[in-house]
Length: 424
Image 1: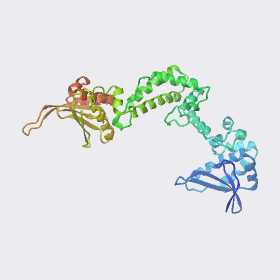
Image 2: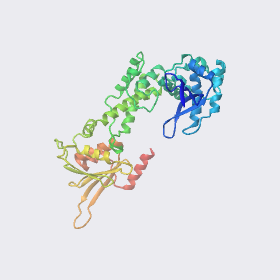
Image 3: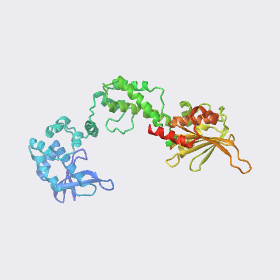
Image 4: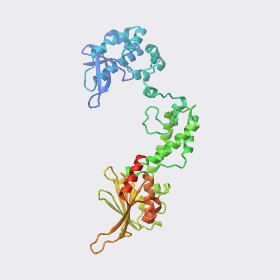
């Protein structure tokens, strides 16, 4: 039989219960192996109950001291009741100076007290009783999260100024640095918002016209890491020049915001629009009047998948090919081919090696003899380089690739060039 003797308005603060005629403190903490909350109890006296009921500060102090014992119990262990009971008199019945001395010796949950309004400056000076004069029953978990985030920054030598903090709050990344940034002007102190917006405006002006295109080699929604790094470097350089007082965390959160927005814009674009906006697909031809010389192409991958493209279809060859890559590319599928059977030529893209081969038929097979091919290799500079080469081939075949060399027919020479580039 369990009866509630005393509870505060906020359910997580420990309750006093009577169980089988005995007074106990009951609190929830941690979780079991099934991720369900665990509940712990330990005995108290009537004198302890009276203090818990009348003195919110002492009640919260006791809670913060018992929580580490609950965490030590893990997902299935028992609470060390002796250790919990040993905290009752020193926290609930002792003089404030003795309580302060106790908290300098034991492990306790500082963030819990901060969430309930404790004075952070006094807590850090070890004056826990004085710090709890501002305590409230209601909890502000955001206050505790920001405090813990500041402590993590302090450990790596970063202290935020008011504008730094405003920018991190504007992007929603004050507490968790891995959070995808958003624009949250309401989270910023109105007095600091205009100054924060000037920093963002500096960043926007610096990267105006820059794009982060998609990278189908890494999936349908992946974006170009090279584009991201270029925009990131541009924004950070401009912001540091205009606002040298900002810490790295603040500068990086602004660049992350603008790069994320640019990447999202590319992801939301149809592939045809993506190619056109990037200047890669111009003139690649489609059923709507393009000027490409290619009328039919075959796309294949390293897993024997095949896709046909015809000029009278609704989409460009470039868009169709990169969609094929986005659908099929994987860690064990990194070789893709575009072939023009009518012209006897094609290109093979080696994503694993940042290289390409162009293949031209010199002599068709006759009378059972094998055809003769010219195979030439070139190094490729990331997805931008691949986009350029694919578009050039679709427009003008292998001849249009001449200016995108150098092209090498000697495999050993090509491998040496690859190694030299890798060593740089």
